Length: 69
Image (cartoon, rainbow, N blue to C red; front, side, top):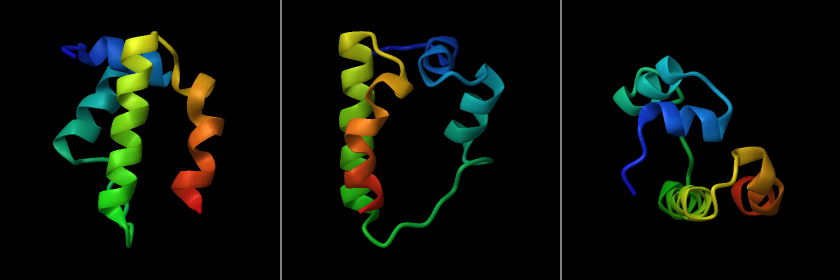
């Protein structure tokens, strides 16, 4: 996909430093019992955001039941 941290920050409506911290594991370390399944859902969301040029808030509601259920 090749998105820059600035592009990711824009899509997620956050800052580039926050994205950097997530990538380096200094922020956002949440434990899930079914991490593998959640990871696939998040990967699907990221791919869709990049492919369709959508922001997180434009697709999040579609994925919430899968992520919290």
